[in-house]
Image 1 (cartoon, one colour):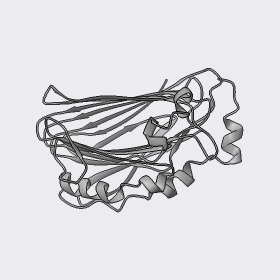
Image 2: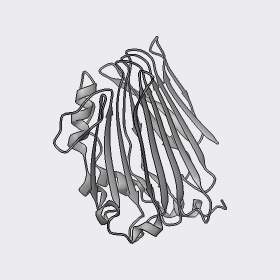
Image 3: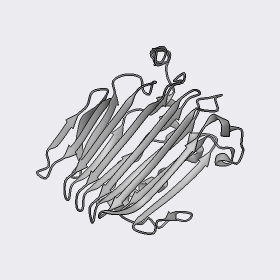
Image 4: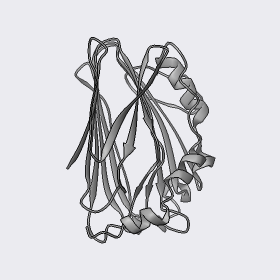
Length: 258
């Protein structure tokens, strides 16, 4: 198991831990703490168990920046896990615009995201799932999001895609990219958005290519809603997908036994 921890304490200090996925402090912007996540080796391979813990103290704001996207490689019968555990104290804010998560042929990935919000806390999360690299149908991915606000359920959702269903045009309408912007602890007024029963909004786009499903404008609006000052413009999904495409070196690294 690999563990990464990012914590903003009550006195504003930033505590960072991590091995395979390393956390690096970035310059603050308008009072917001910024931390980059950097993978030190190819991810994800069979047997990988990545756990990322995020904690933000009352009244503080944190932005998580991903330097590159993630590719789940062929696992030859193995499986990998990606777990994110977020805990925000009263009136804390987290913005995490993830870069594309590519599920290559032969991959088998379990993704779990847990979000625990105290009263007044707000979160903006972006997740872009890409089923397969160019010319691939993609492997198996099961992703679950569980969120609680003030110790009460806010959202529970599970999405599953696997090769057996890729030939079914009903899945994602035949698309291979699922782009999601999720706002928790606040409501984003936007056409086509799904409003949760309590304070929360979800908006999705599906497309055959990542940049066609780009929700950059929605993301910017969501960030402006939950933060007192606008964050930098998000990186286009098309650029992020290019960055996530493995080089020859990463392909070689992916051949190590699972």
